[in-house]
Length: 207
View 1 (tube, helix red, strand yellow):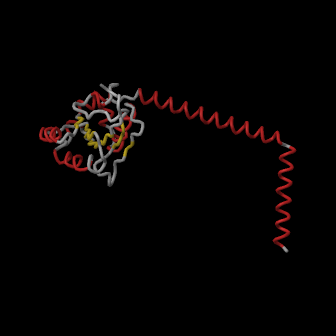
View 2 (cartoon, one colour; view 1 turned 90 degrees about the horizontal axis):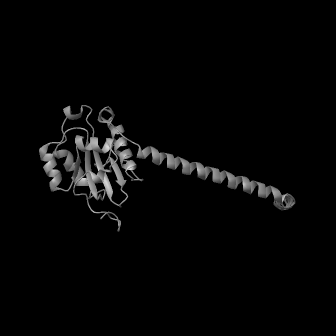
């Protein structure tokens, strides 16, 4: 009996609600207009933020003293932001425990996946040099694990001659302090500063 009564009451409430809406149909229009307006405002603000972020990214510059003073994790953030500035909209910092040799990943506008290992030296050129063992890690994971098209090691310090030779032999790219300074302070993307970068994946890009 109780279930029947509850059902009757429920049906009555539904009928009353429908009748009220039919009598006040104009409220539905008002609500619809308000929702549409709020959605338009939200979309416009989102587009404006995206444009502003793009403008800020294009103007991003770093001087070497700024990079030297960073914590190593913030150095990775800076490298990520520079890749974003260059048009890699999916640039992400993945450095940390278990990163398997990848501190930053990014896909450039030509479809190439960049896997970047960062080696920050607070003392710059006076700090420990990046050596062949550092490149062994990158070489062992960048392509086999992360499927990189371009494998890069970036440092604000020195790189040993054997490490440079090993990088050339293994098709790894080294961004030393000089190259980093040109990249961070200029407007040219990294792929224009490095030699022998793999050809674009996307057809019809670059000649």
